[in-house]
Length: 308
Image 1 (cartoon, helix red, strand yellow):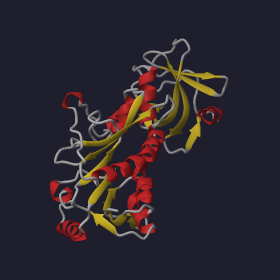
Image 2 (tube, one colour):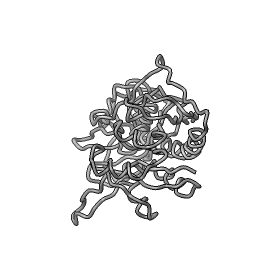
Image 3 (tube, helix red, strand yellow):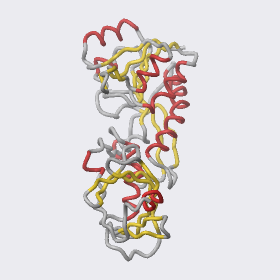
Image 4 (cartoon, helix red, strand yellow):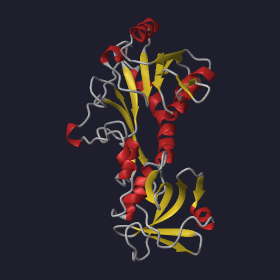
């Protein structure tokens, strides 16, 4: 049994936190972003991890700054054996050196591929067929620490950010527990990352969400899949439209990039730089999310309209 402090923010981390809470290990604290006032009532809004920690009655430790003296003193006083970090922030040395065995981080790629903040998005943007999860010991640089374990995860054609994140979270539970067992052994030796195989996955910028219809249908579909949590966007008749679901259409491309064809009053096919893209689920500015069939039946789109 190890004394563990968990660190995380996003919903991806919640199943792992829940599993640790139900394990033989002693979960002595949960660090997550400090709650912020939100909404008309300005009530405090917790991160998904912070909310779950409170619901489970765990020792919630809010973190506004990772250099905050109160936070550092709190972590030092708890004397954790190890930190488990999932979808959190970059830990400074002053933090990860406070536990006896350092900090295990779960990363959503097969490191050293896709070091950085957005490995899941970049694997989908690039049309990869294989990804995985890695656990490693955090050091002073970003995602460069020695590897503990890795597990491959196939990427299906229909996978989106949401579905792939769920797969990684599920696989992450097992690999975290295996990693904790390994780290606890006397002869444990993590493996240095292969420096010749490095690639990067920087944070997704706002401009990356806009669709360029001169790109291929495959490239655009990959963007829709990668950004499904917020929706890749374009414009139609002066209004922004988000596309949440699409698929490549293998028919003959006879349309201009972005030009719409309405098929059987139920389907919308858009021309691309090569091939076509069938739109499946969209959201017009100030409207609710809807299927394309609902969009067509609402007489809000016409054959020949241009996207972009």
